Length: 288
Image (cartoon, rainbow, N blue to C red; front, side, top):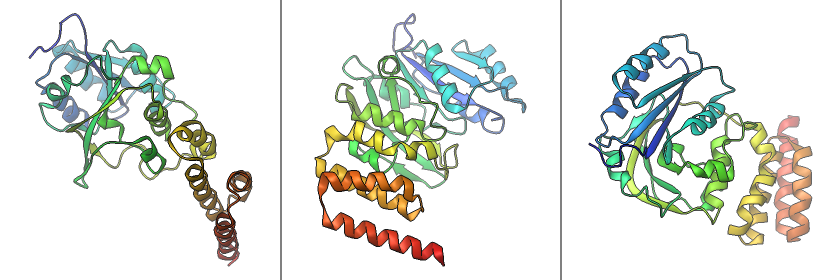
């Protein structure tokens, strides 16, 4: 069905792939079955060697909305930035190569929310094989404890021009850092819609991995983005928790400046007590 002027692409679905031959047919079918038709699919193939490229090329011949970019990239977030740069749609959505839309009517239902009134629209996502739905509104401070799944989110493309794209220094958590920037910005107009957007395979790229650079920069990320959403005491309490996490990991040199920063701003005997207890516990545990 056509829900939008034919000469104006509403949505660019951006899908980075590499050796995704076992999944690619399923996800391409999930997209092709959508009852909403005014989209393009931009597939960024990082020079696959397992037939992924040939499968996409075959689909491209059948559907002019499919575009293939096949070239070496500097990781998944570099591919996503390239996808945004080449996108023609007013909105962008990132699809994992082993994931898929929840049902055939997802885009048709979401279409009515992708308007000039909003810059970022998000729904729910089903994690598989866990069969758990990540749902509900996301407040800026929710992103302190964990990222919002990017497959819940539709972004207005101009956000990436105004606020920057994925920061490539974060090899695993760049989507978390970007979502912190976008959700914490009061200038970005957001809307939650109670629809399940996608099925997300929980064994994906970032599962069970730690982005050391992201966590090394956490204090700066935290203070730059969350200060306007938290009272100072709570903000420094949260940084105190991070300080104790570093101590637990024996990263004492990184914990020390955060310890003094929190102490200067809170003068909290309770913080000192908890942190010193964690320090001696850590030293004792690792000494044994």
